[in-house]
Amino acid sequence: MASVDSVMNAVEFAKEKHGNQRYGDLPYLFHLHSVAWQAEIIRLKCLPTCDRHVIFCAAYLHDVLEDTDAKYSDLVSGWGEEVAEIVYAVTDELGRNRTERKAKTYPKIVGNKQALLIKLADRIANVKHAIEQGNNQILKMYRREQEEFALHLRMTGNQFEPIWNELERLLNG
Image 1 (cartoon, one colour):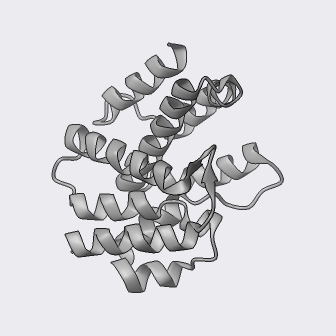
Image 2 (cartoon, rainbow, N blue to C red):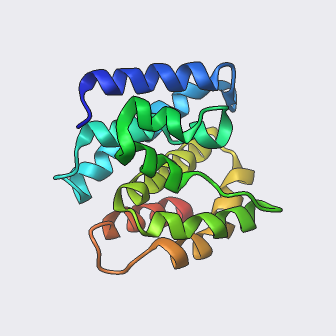
């Protein structure tokens, strides 16, 4: 069971691991805060019985396996297998290009509703940031990917439908 202390530890661990990485012109922690905020909104709307501390931990840690030297075992020992599995599920697999990496990663996400929640929070946070920054190049990439993203991850009529609709609205804005 995750706790407030485990969330604070996740924030500190992610901050340390991401170090000087940037999110555009901003410290990477800005992105992690955005994903955590978006994840909490989605949790409240779609998975209210899900442990909010687990979701916060996973949101703050969601990029550490992909973008830092953190190991799966670090996550298990620090936050437990549930958080580690969520982070692992959203971590891109290896591939020759972005399309191949995403295609290899989607099956991991499908099997874990909490991972889908984090992935949607990440995507919405990224799209909102691109809109706010006027970054049309990033928006074009997400628009181009949306059909494939939804094909693999969207299950019509499930609890995440309002979030998918919001993502579509943002992308078609």
